[in-house]
Length: 185
Image (cartoon, rainbow, N blue to C red; front, side, top):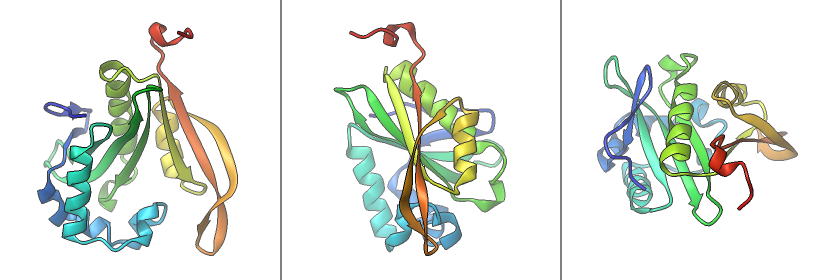
């Protein structure tokens, strides 16, 4: 699954990452406990080689899409957003994201990226449903999805272990509003 060119938002360009991103700011994000606090990636060791391998595997996967988030103002790589895995049989996919550059936290970039990738998934890929999950306590992520039109669909109690405590798993989702998807086939 490839995006030709880039997806555009008011503040961002979203474009497919190449392996050179593995030795840029992406590597430092993946070694920062504060940035990884709400991600399962916090349990791994990340090197330029492992990140290059991840980028390569995402780019080679026909059912996944990894996009870097680049600020229009200075072309700086500030985060990533992922679609996948996509189930073609069920026309649904998962979205996950990471805003790695702490200097841009709180600027609404996550909401812009979610909105752009949602539009692409519904209009271009013709998916019926999107979903995302996050740790309870990750209020910024929940807010970003809700501002992008998503809804909290479920909460699984005491699902994740975080900071020696149990937190819920929050499941967010959105259905394609196109009339073509509103009736059962």
